[in-house]
Length: 322
Image (tube, rainbow, N blue to C red; front, side, top):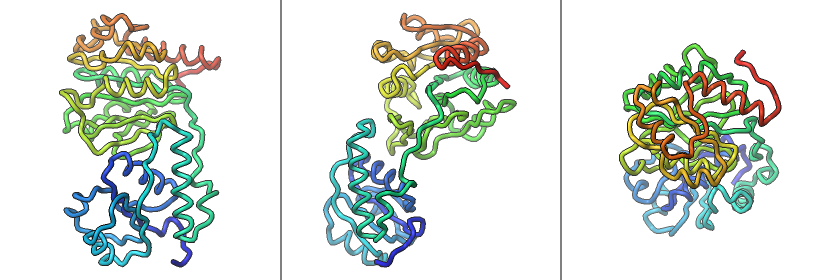
C-alpha cells in the first residue's frame, strides 16, 4: 500500500481474549493510529460497520464470514495471528511483544519510522507516589475537604475509588474539585496517572493499574456487591506500586477496602483512615482501624497535612498549599 501518516490510518481489532484486545489497542494508539473499535467475534457480528477501516488486526481464525466483512469495507491491509501479549506488569516482555507488533505494522504499512518513532516512547511520569482514596456514603464532603487542603504541586497522582450512584457521574468531579486546583475527572478509557489529577474509577467497568502508571479499563463489570470494589483496587495497586502507594479510606458504609490487608502490609504500602467519629458513616474507616494495619488516623485536614509531611520527608523537599 502507498506510504501514509499514522494519523490517517484507522484500524479495527478483533480478538477473543480481553487482555489481548487491550494490548493491541494500546500499542496501536501509542503508534498514533486511530482505533475504530476493539471487539470479539460475537460483537463484530452484532455491530454494523459504518466507519472507514484501513487495517484489520485479527487474532484468531480468518474465516469466510470475516473475509466477507473485510471485502465489503475495501480495507487496505489485514494482519492475522498474534502471539499472546504478556501481562502489562511484565514490562520487558510486554515491550518486546509491542516492538514485534510495531515491526509488522511498519512493514505492511511502509512506515519504517514506526520502529524508532518517539511517539511510541514512554516518558517518565512526573509523579513519585500514587494516592488511592476509598470512600462511600459521606465520602464526597470528606474528599473535597482533603483536596482543599492538599497542594496539586505534590509529586503524587490520585486515584479515587468511590461507591456512587450513576446519577452522580456528572456532578461528583465538579463537587470535589470546587474551590481547589485539582483536576478531577471520571475514567472512561485507558489512560495514564498524572500528577495534579484526581482520576475517578468508573462503577460499571473494572480497572487495573500497571507498573508504567496506566489505569487500564476492562470490558467487564465489578464482581460482588461493591461497585467499584475498593478492596480489589487496593490490592492491585499495592502489588504494582508497593511502598510508593498511600491508601486512605474515608467515610463509608460497609467494610470494602478491608480485604487483602495482610498482603498490602507485605508490600510496605501505607494505609491510613479518616477518624470514624468525624465520618458521616464510620463503619468503613473503622474496619481499616480494627484490622490492626492502619498507620495513621485523622480528620480530612489532618490526613492532607500528614500526606504533605510524608511526601516532604520521603523526597526531602518542602511543599506548601499555594
